[in-house]
Image (cartoon, rainbow, N blue to C red; front, side, top):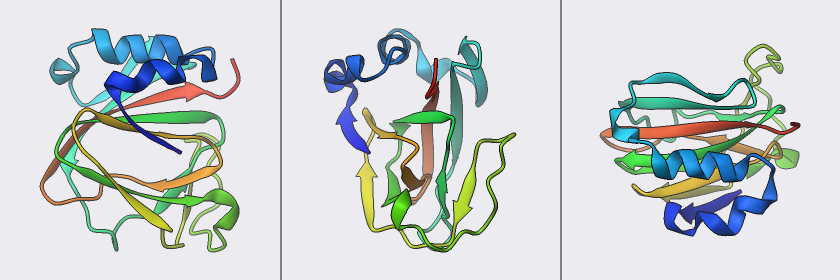
Length: 150
């Protein structure tokens, strides 16, 4: 898991072949003008999901993980207090892995909470369970989904 400001993103560009393209998209797109929903960038290898919704409580949030995608979750408005726990430490699955949606949920409590303000992002890898969209008020964010294997 990585927490950083978009201004610091260049240090992560070389970690994955698609990260440079992902960060270029975040920097060179009018993100506030994107409607909620899925937006293509590079087929199923790299795409964006825009979310604008009321935040939920910590108790309502479930940890989730993905096998095929890395998430870069950039907050645009509000504060997203994302929960985190190493996947290897999750012992209470709430669902089986859904391959079609690339997601599995857990009932474990996060081991830490990361208050992510506008302009900052959290990067979650397949070994990071995370519980996003937690906080008071509205949260507007862009989630980039980057295929682990390209």
